Length: 114
Length: 113
Image (cartoon, rainbow over all chains, first blue to last red; front, top):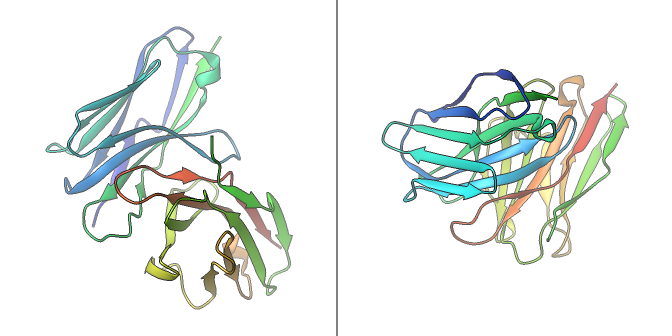
């Protein structure tokens, strides 16, 4: 059974720091992996999608990497800003089945202090 | 940018009542989903819907729950006889065919009192 774990659960950094959020999954048979941002009490905003054949994806100050064989993904945020404060969720789409359901980690709650 | 729209944003209901949560997925998407997030917990898969039928459901999705796509644009989740533990944020999501990612709605916060 696929399990997704995110470390750390919470992170507080001063503005301007570069930081890395970690996601691990137990079964390497995945179709893709998606990173989301969730603001308190709000919905999920897709940040980056990495297909199983890809190693990384970049969007602005965000870079996500995928190492399928070791069951890991990282989200790198460069030059963090207070507006980056949110919960970041990692979700994998298992290879098995055709329904495309996602399995989520518990998230990393990021606070960027001015 | 196309959006998934959910209504209402917040619903309060008495225990034992029926609720219907509504979603309008992105028009050219083919796969539709409901997820829920109990406060402080992970986002959990409930059900997937494709070609006008349920394609997969989790163990959470028991006879209390049902989904429907009544008119080709709306996608609804019905919860019969709500319980206190049904209080959660419910998210609708959709995706197109193939390897593209999901688009989630902004959620409906259901409070059962």
